[in-house]
View 1 (cartoon, rainbow, N blue to C red):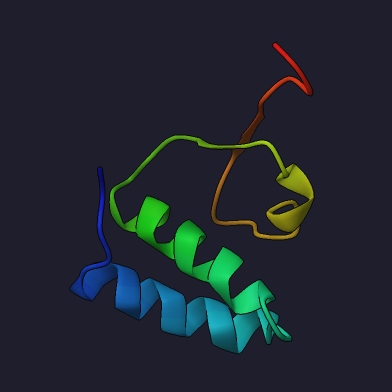
View 2 (tube, helix red, strand yellow):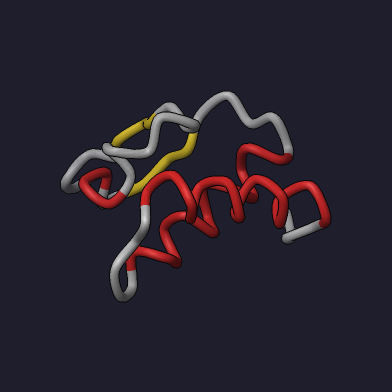
Length: 66
């Protein structure tokens, strides 16, 4: 389990300035900033559409069903 930290906050602030999210999109940036702060190679999601425009993370898409 990973958690927000000082590094993720700095990354998050840069992402908010860069992407100017509307509404709930801010939470996608928070998730991406935490992943980036831990130098994670990939972010896995069932809903990759939420993260496709975020350059700072690479995506792994889960199958629609197992």
